[in-house]
Image 1: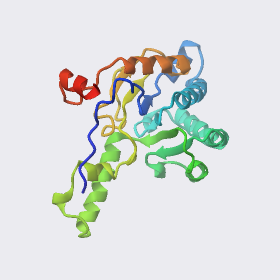
Image 2: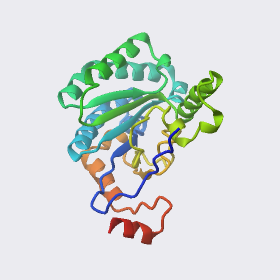
Image 3: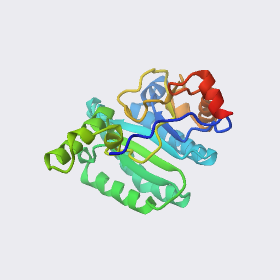
Image 4: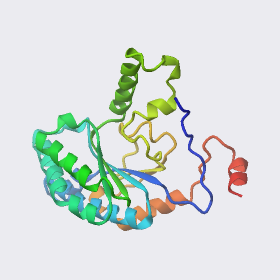
Length: 254
């Protein structure tokens, strides 16, 4: 197998993250503060999704990955889960044509078998419709967990070893990475989490190995284009070393 491509510092003039991942948190708290049901909060969060997708495309971000529904979210009250599934299905029906019109490619990562046949069908149709688009790559993580992703990749490699197609000694980081959900995508440069929580909650564990983390107290329904710009500005001011010294990074950017 080939060796993994290690992340490298980018030049000083190249301060835009190629890949931004967002943990969209705070919908329930936003709704509760307004005396509304949690479901209303999730609906309010849809407009933030639209605004951030537009701004990411405008700014030239290559990949935007949104954590929409984790594998742990099934533990939430049944009424909320059902409402989230209805909202997901509605978005697949209503939003995909708009994405296609703006040359945005949509991918959905996660264990699709947990969804209804109807949702699985619309996911497949959305990916087929937008598959040749060359603008922003929008990735929606739904029924997704970072541990699940890594375990599935390991299982696939194990199956190849059992079949005699691969020697155990040939397994390396590059080979494992090639079996993950975001194989071929740039590693996550910037991970944003809203609502004030400061954890990554089993999201893209492998892909965020060198990501810059940005935590904001803003609840997701209040997070719009300006807030996204603020996160990008914060990222632009950071020095990414990837194990190097400051002097090495500065010499490389000279």
